[in-house]
Length: 145
Image (cartoon, rainbow, N blue to C red; front, side, top):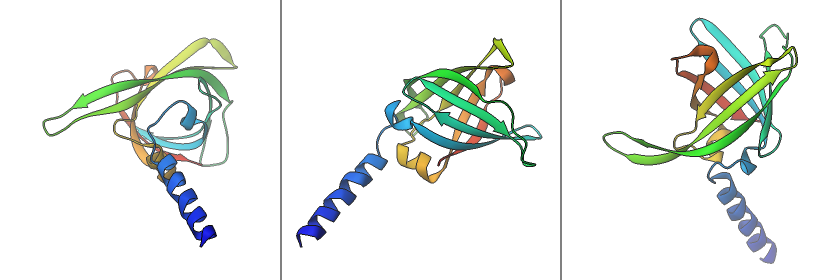
């Protein structure tokens, strides 16, 4: 009975941690990202290294990979409203450079509106905007590995 209670307690604590708000600390880890921009499909390995830094690497369906780029990010709260709901979310604001051209910076935003860490583990769709595609809102599927 004592072991059953202990197991139930750990299960409860673990499920609460999975459904937590998105914070820089619980974003740390590896992610697979798939996005479609126009007629082009983009695949990324994305790794949040610590509470301020990340790495990303584009890979192709034929197995080729691009160089690993790195950058910094911040996570800021956002509010969104439609005619039915008023809710809050998180905006991941990132800037990165690649080793081949450190003078060229790329900035992007990931809108995690209404998402929890559990959604990232199961896989979810987020909205991305970037300086590489001004004026476009790109839907990307993100899954924590």
